[in-house]
Amino acid sequence: MPALYGSLVKTRREKADSGGMISVPLLLRCAFVVMALCIADARANRVLSITSNEEQVTLTNEATQKHWQLNEPVCLVRGDKELACGFIGVLGEKQMTMQIESREFKVLPGMAVQVKRQGRGVSSSGGGLTRAEAIATGRYRPTADIALGPMAGLNYLFPLVPSVQLALTRKLTIGADIRYSTFCSAGVTGGSCLGFMATVNYYYSQFAFKGIYFSGGAGLYSTTLESGAVKEKVSPLALQGLVGWRGRPRWGMNFDVSLAAGAQYLMVDDASFSLRNEFRGLLPLVSMSLGYSF
Image (cartoon, rainbow, N blue to C red; front, side, top):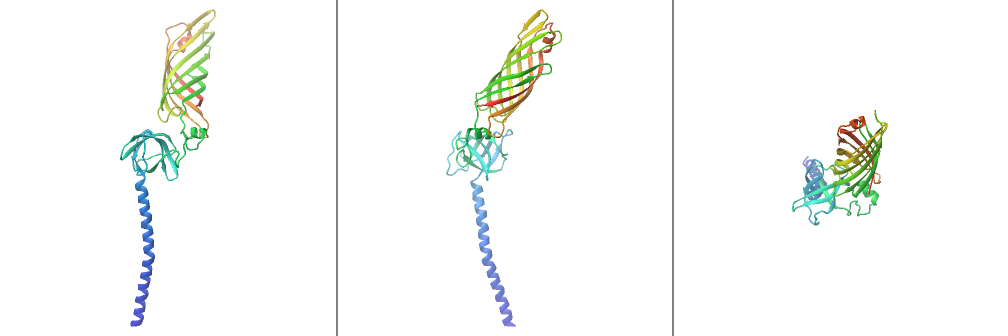
């Protein structure tokens, strides 16, 4: 019995020792993985806040070997996903603020991300993308846009309105369009309307020629009215306000589509022609166009 008892105790000790030899490497391996994850997470930049319109992201500045510069083009990367791209707008020792220009995925507060220079490990217009690909991903910002499309209200229609816009800043553009239409109305045997409108446009959600925009304008119409042998010409001033959206396809082409709605106000005095009574005052306006940015 003592010999048997001693044999059992020795066997249990050997098993315990053997189990200890197996568990120690596992524990060391797990500790190494956890340490590596902690180090990687510590070097990652942490998103501190993001504005409601998702245009600015404030994050920690964890750069140890990188020296950022103001207005430097960068991208936020998480894993193998490129979340957003833009440039550094504010740079501090512990924090930085990034101005977003294009966004593929949502950026959330508390998210751990990597900040990388455009063209170094991320795609960019300076890192091998073609111009068409840069336009599709929003990296290329055009400076001009020409468009053509109809404008209409409840009792008038301009079938094809050519318009052009020029970018002054990243979000602000100026534009002009020419409107022409022929129409008839009760008591009027013939008429034509030629209009010119100058506009100022602010692109709220993205940048020039992309996203939600607000437009204000002022212009002049030249309206010719005919009723039998009577002919009269009216040239009212006009004011206009629109809210619209301009989108761009994702397959690398620099065409865009615009939809907008609002109103215009025509300053027309009293007259006997019924057409003048219809095309005057506050009038609703909707607009559609197909444009080309360059």
